Image (cartoon, rainbow, N blue to C red; front, top):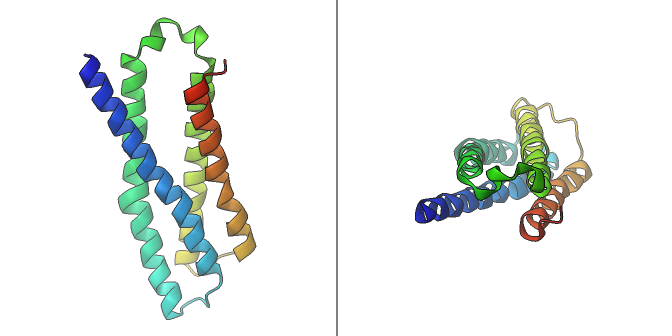
Length: 148
C-alpha cells in the first residue's frame, strides 16, 4: 500500500509540474500575442501554440492532478483526522478555485484571441502571468510547512 501511495503521489507531483508549466507559459504567449495585429502570420501561429498548449498539456495535466489528488485524499493518513488538516483544506481551496479558476480564465482569453477579440493589453497579461506563481508559492508553502 505504501508503494502504491508513493507512486500516486509522484504522478500527482508530475501532473502538477506539467500543469504549472502551462499556467506559467500560456499568459506569456498572450503577452506576445497582444502585440500582434489580428490576422497576421504571427498571430495565427500563436493561436495554434496556445490551443495546443491548453488542449494537449494543460487540460490533461489539470484533470490528472485532480483525479490523483482525490485518490491521495481517500488513501491518505490525514483522512482519519481531517480537523487537524487545515493546511489541506486551504491547499484544496487554492488549487481548485484559485488555479482552476485561473485555468478557466486563461481558456476564455484563448477563445478571445482565437476570434481576434482580445480586449486586454500586453501589460494586463504580464500581471496575470504572476497570479499562478503566487498561488503556487502559497500552495507549496502550505504543503511543506503545514502551518495549521
